[in-house]
Amino acid sequence: MKLYNENNPAPNPRKVRIYLAEKGLTVEQVRVPIMKRAHKDPEFLKKNSLGQLPVLELDDGTFISESVAICRYFEELNPSPAMFGTGAKERALVEMWIRRAEFRLWNPMGQVWIHSDPRTAPVVPLQYKEFGEMNRKVVANAMTWIDGEMADGREFLAGGNYSIADIVLLCGIDFAKFVNMDMPEECARLRHWHARVSARPSAAA
Amino acid sequence: MKLYNENNPAPNPRKVRIYLAEKGLTVEQVRVPIMKRAHKDPEFLKKNSLGQLPVLELDDGTFISESVAICRYFEELNPSPAMFGTGAKERALVEMWIRRAEFRLWNPMGQVWIHSDPRTAPVVPLQYKEFGEMNRKVVANAMTWIDGEMADGREFLAGGNYSIADIVLLCGIDFAKFVNMDMPEECARLRHWHARVSARPSAAA
Image 1 (cartoon, helix red, strand yellow):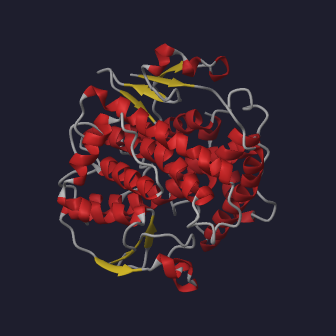
Image 2: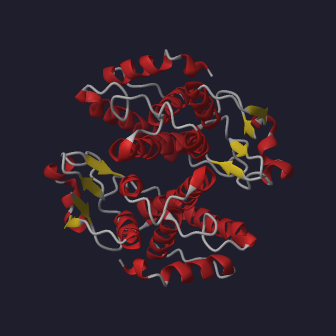
């Protein structure tokens, strides 16, 4: 088994590294340098035709892409400690929060990165800059909304237990900062949550 | 237990209806008429602060939103027939294809709907029309890419078994048509797949 991956600041590869660290799992990793466009190489496209990282190669030759799908593969084989929730209700709430973090925060964050950041300009066919810049506000609103949802005193995003949903949100917020979108000052609950999950040793994985 | 939902053409509510039909499950449904903006009513926002459908209310008062999270809740309680895959590898591949259908097809489809369709103009603060129109090409490319992935002769999107990934793709493709984006003529494999899954009785749910 091999995990094709990249270092920081790539946010999707980081999700899998943090997940593995939390689970105490070790997997052979092969670095695919994005800055050298190695993920668009014809050889790599045979592993994932989308040219994206991470990709997990199983011993039978199957390739699994999408960071959360890779984590779920490991979760099925190593259920404890549970990172996708325990029981129907908690598992559904973890899934809900993964998706909320992705659709609300990651999607507009991606639009800022693609359409208004000078670092992606060389590889994006056409940047819609005004649209990209507008999405900064959408990202800030998402952070404020999550902060509001945390008013019930939950310790982690999906409730009382640290989960893959926290990993998705953490990597999103840290990448948003890389694209110059920090958490709004008034989001005290979100900031406390961020400090808590960032203090876990896994965050440095 | 109650499922707050809406009729066609709303694509996310349809996913849950098809899933329930495939599983042979019956749940009390409460219609929330989107055209009357009932999903933005203060009473409804207590169930889902995002003002989106579907929402599942459990008997203990918990609200679960996000269509795939709701389906996963039912799947945990009713594992057979498996709609999220069986075993670690298949479950990971189903998850991978849910996400590929969403990120590749649903996301740009949503941008067309939000930013270039006259029917959403009254409720979108500012439409970025050129950006919206450009996304028609992204949607067509996504359909062509999926058609290419089907060249291995698979019967369903994630392999040999009908799954929630097929439901996600079916509802996406049918909603894309509603926004005037049909499958490209040359996508014969995708069109055959679409005819197959549309012929299942669940598609009319």
